[in-house]
Image 1 (tube, rainbow, N blue to C red):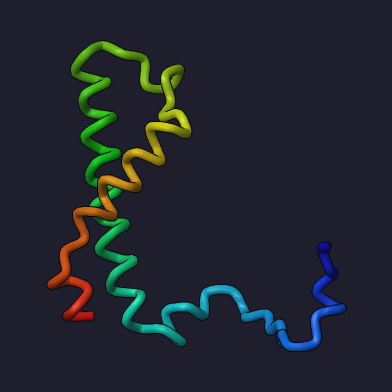
Image 2 (cartoon, rainbow, N blue to C red):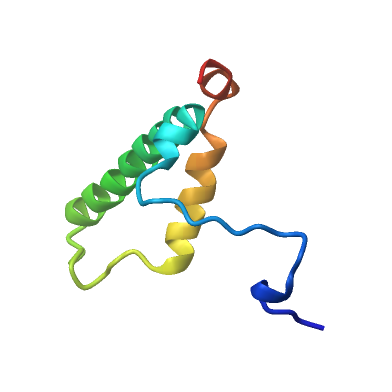
Length: 86
């Protein structure tokens, strides 16, 4: 049985202002920064490979499966040291 959020009595829903995560959870900001840098590096390598192979990177955009695979791979490359130091 599904209930609407307004019918749930033990849950308090609070909306946060945009871009507040880094201020409320500064540790997450370092981890997210590391992940984004690793993802962008992988994506740039993908574009360079397409360019070097003569593939039209405008017509052959990254598909959803490739993006998810890149995300999983890059997340697995965020080291425990990075997480510990944040």
